[in-house]
Length: 255
Image (cartoon, rainbow, N blue to C red; front, side, top):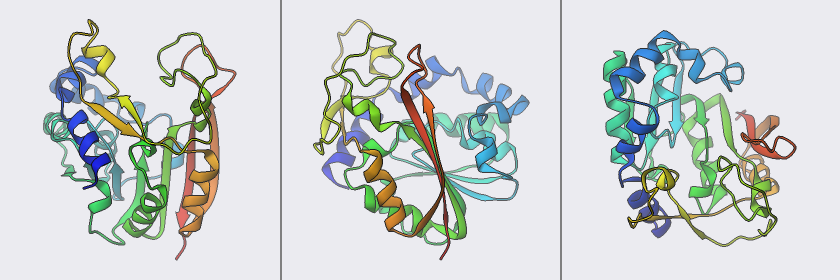
């Protein structure tokens, strides 16, 4: 495990379960809602994922299971790989309450030794900035998939690299101030620090993040053999709907 992974593991091991309970709810409450309407939790990508019943799916950096458990409820065989034991604890509690089985591997994703096993790789939310070598990420995902396996990758739009404030949920005035072409590792807050530390009196561990350009992302996945089928860009999730906030890449392993 490299220094970036160690740093991010420490950050995501700090009060993560407490955050998910605050953000989503107690496991039994969340499980009850997921059981009633699993497709709701997948609504943004369900058409891209296609039929998931009996499919083998790896949910990479799947955190608290909020995507993996609905997939399992729809009949998929789901494995989460994530670096946080806290995330695993919450996800397994919800899965147990929902009466579904999921496999949760606590590991640095790049250290997995599994090959040609999955029908679908699903990454959702902010994922790529946790890695300092995007080609290694692309190669690892490619190696995990069966022939004709599909990748559905949703992430924050690289446009945010030029913004002074990169938090797409903050809803404040936007200012230019970033460098789109920067390749430096940057120190950043764990995603929930501002929610659990609203008084600012606790020292939260920081993450190490690498922000990528769209060219770097597409080139990495195409260069390892993925056939890119779609690149869908979407607006921000706040009032700034006139600029991109996220994107979804759909690609297939053909060899």
